[in-house]
Length: 476
Image (cartoon, rainbow, N blue to C red):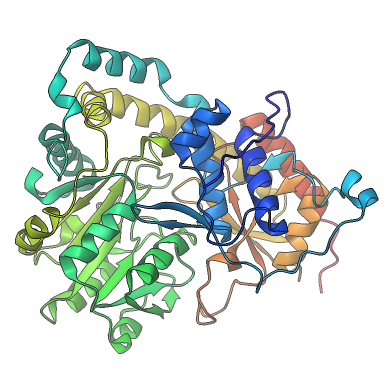
């Protein structure tokens, strides 16, 4: 593992996380960071560069999503082997001194992975943490319950009951530092003999974790309601991994009929389970919040994954798993080999944040902020209705733009970059060639726009540039 001496410019219009991302990506591309080489932890790198840990987390998350890094549970981040995918020619001295606009950093980045860090309640979080430390509770510096602090688990069960329609006991809840750890723990509970079915396109990071853990994986086609149960039945899978409240990246909200079909599939055979990843259910812009699939589960077939990364901040690194009653004994045995991966101080800070109502107020504020950004971006994209179609806009903090003028995904990204705007390809989330959405592939003509990290002024300017970039294409 090496230290990364990155010269950051705090006055640049390029965000700090993107400067870190660009530096590491270039070092991997040119071979200065070798394949399989371990990178510093986000905590160590943030301390070394004197930036917030959330800044480094955002850079690492982007590198993970693009395949430059891989995350090995309980070990850290490693550079991926990319020689077989890329051949980077050596630049001449003149080229190095004069990079093209396309290769340089963009003015506006529609990353789907970030959040609005300017709205994080720093003062409240600092006050709660200080008060916890002032109590001089030495026990908090000892190893706690492997499942996590009981108070936090109880607060989560209360929140899930009120906000997500999920009824569970604190004993069913396990706290972990991110979904990576929780999926590793789950593999110890279930074993790895299962075949896991995933949608495509899907959250590829989860796919890679399952792959590293040794599971047999398959993909199941989707339609307008989500994963097709007929395809799931034919797949021979024993576990289905789904995101019913807001499928990533397509943004589909699974209707109740399909949810009941999934639950019926799980109930038909002993040992079948559904993993419900409820990663950003807090943000919904049409109708009332949809209850979690877990809340409809009467047969204890749903394994529920939740996180505070999207609703509070990625650097909080607190996720939770809700296990069915039938898996608790196996979980207790597995936990003998594990310790809690979240600081007890951080857990108690989050507990107080939930208990004292700060979380609810923060969510209400963020819903209003994201709602305004959402409306603004949709209003700007409506001006492009002659050559673009928007989908997945009813929840979350990203949406999809499909070109209807014959422009390809690749060309759309290139044209946007020429205007100083970075957008993201939907095809990066495809697994194999089997993805079907509404009966057709979106792989060649759809891009992703995440709007959480941009201000309203930046969104308006960036959308104007996209209109310039994409509106000049003559329909085919």
